[in-house]
Image 1 (spheres, rainbow, N blue to C red):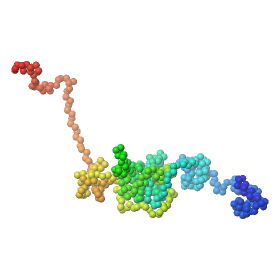
Image 2 (tube, one colour):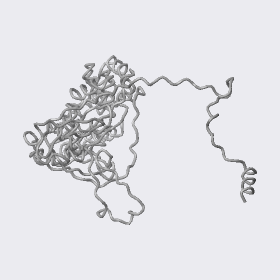
Image 3 (cartoon, rainbow, N blue to C red):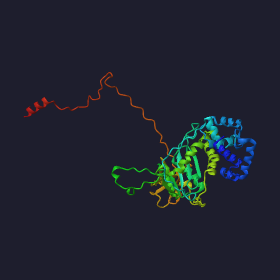
Image 4 (spheres, rainbow, N blue to C red):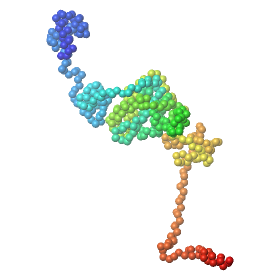
Length: 435
């Protein structure tokens, strides 16, 4: 009998002995008068056990069978469920094994079986809270995670994620490398699906910003006095799409996308493991059909304003031209250009006034095609196939002349000096004779 039950028994016995009224007993116990009457009747019939709950010592009416608990523990003990936490474990038990139990029940089962242990929350550095943007599309956080997503079952892949700041709506793709081309492909997919956001929020990686080279002589210059560096390919593409680029000064500044990676590194990794994903294509298929729909239906929130800040791109922007590797080249006198160690000839139909010696824009597009633009007009070009010169066989080497080591002396210098000068003594004798 607990202390609360003892206190209740004391109040009921005082009411039974008429020391207090039933109304006073009800006020003391926080019960209704009718309930006090029921307890007094039970006290006369069953004695002091009347204050003890009738289910005390008996299993609950909602008690699950022991077989269900053992089956759930056996499932969660498998290797594929390694590292699952109670919330995710309860979801997979209901979705894949038809064992519908609350996450708190699963938590108690896993803790008793040694499959999960709660961890104390560490006190972390507190950063200033930044309120969400009010409209969807005002700000999109963009980052890449190089986590071991396939856990060694396949090639190393990267996850590029774009999460809306106002709604936490997520768009992501698995890629083979964190390169400019793969980031442009992800940007292309986002713009095609949702439109052009007002701004992207990223880190200061070299994909988005050209790293300045500061020399000792220029250290005295202020930042605004230094020469502006040309943009990267992604920076140029964002400018042409009229999208503002904002650089984050710390990982905490873009905490929304960083926290999304923490969730993905827990739930997405385990989902890929359960699905047996081993390739990049299978990973993107699982991402589109399972993880992203779950995220956007469960974790996304409603914005403060229902207006969508995304802007349309169709009809005004050529994504194939903008999202490409762009360079500039000078047209030579024979109306050719040099690009990627190859020469291209501009067709006669595209030749116009002022083209020779001018600067043209060369676009190396994602489909492998080369497009050349002069002003607002595209030129027709063709690749010049360089002919390989025919190498003639070299002449046979002349036979080696016999050297000193061969028998016989060479006579080629016998007649080299026909008119030799007299010796010194002879010359003196001749000089004295003539005098």
